[in-house]
Length: 360
Image 1 (tube, rainbow, N blue to C red):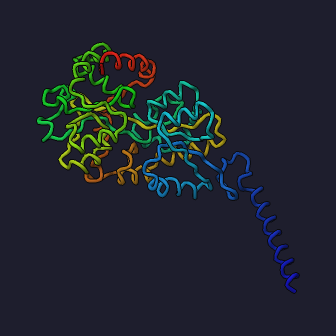
Image 2 (spheres, one colour; image 1 turned 30 degrees about the vertical axis):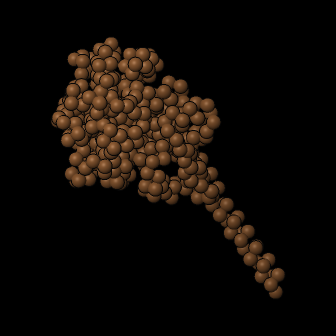
């Protein structure tokens, strides 16, 4: 009797399996033209190369809903910009989608590492700032966040009010200052700011380096990572320096009276982009994910959690919600944007001059 029941059970399971298989062939993933992972059955795998910060937030609010909606399993490859870009260059990763600052994304474009984006699939593009839609050209990915690079300072320790890039050269800040290293993402921005402080209306390399050379004696350390800035500021080793607005919350945790300034000449736009890696077998799925990240739902949750500054213009934040992030057309539209193609063409020479003329 037991053997007969087991045989009947196995037969039933087999028939159900055949029925489900038939349904899949009729309308699931096997449907002609369907993007991988959009139907039932085994989930597709989407490999995303990213930094890995705020991982719990992204898993819950960004990855999980997309996985459920598209029947996909998201796998992360974590690291900094340079490490992850080099892996793609070397062909040592199977990444579908890569998050990079515009500085590094331009290098990827010049190396021919990215697929051309099908903008007709990115329906949320209409809702984002113009500056974010195609920061590196129409063929490539948008910016999903824009941060501003300005100046943070401790008013008491600085001994003066800071309003301008030129204020970094004030004698009150001697031996109290930090600047980004030229090899960091924001390094070329401080070079441009030095050109402006020197009185040039357009970028003048010689004036910029001459101006920075006069500031070297005031610099405690040239930082390569934001954590270095935060640590020096918290310990009172520095009183001021250029930094991204998104890190001001960390400075205020240590020094509550910290102020962040958008210099009167303008702060700089730092944009993080997202692109589909050439050769990806999941291009449409990757584009769907980009569109999801641009949605009001994701952008609003990210902004309210102080994870990223939003590019979607349809969300409305209360003043306290917008505190510490780059928010609003009146702020974003005034940001200065460097030509990253020009930066990458000249960076090697700038690094050489920096080492010879500025830090010696």
